[in-house]
Image (cartoon, rainbow, N blue to C red; front, side, top):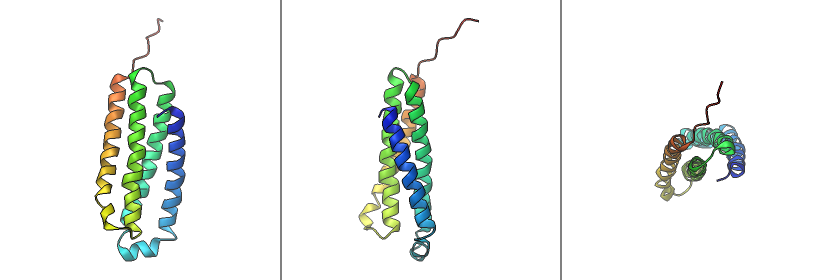
Length: 135
């Protein structure tokens, strides 16, 4: 991912996270409480918003990253984006009454989130240190 696509992903993940969080807290609250799924919806919205911020941070770092660090950051951002779709998307669908076969999708999204964070660590190690300026 480039810094522009990471920014776009952050914007889309953020706006849909706010919208879905509000939708669950207001319009769907009684339905979700009746099904015992309010916590699942809240978890999806929380993880989605957390990773919107992470995508924004990745985009900022990508703007200045050099060497192999930029590739690792881009891969981390791609994993987080996939994690939002798989983890959050499956939780939203299950909470809303979707088919049970979506249940095994949720951990795949969690793995994508974790892989993204690991790749961010790889990027930190790969990031070239700026040259020290003489004083």
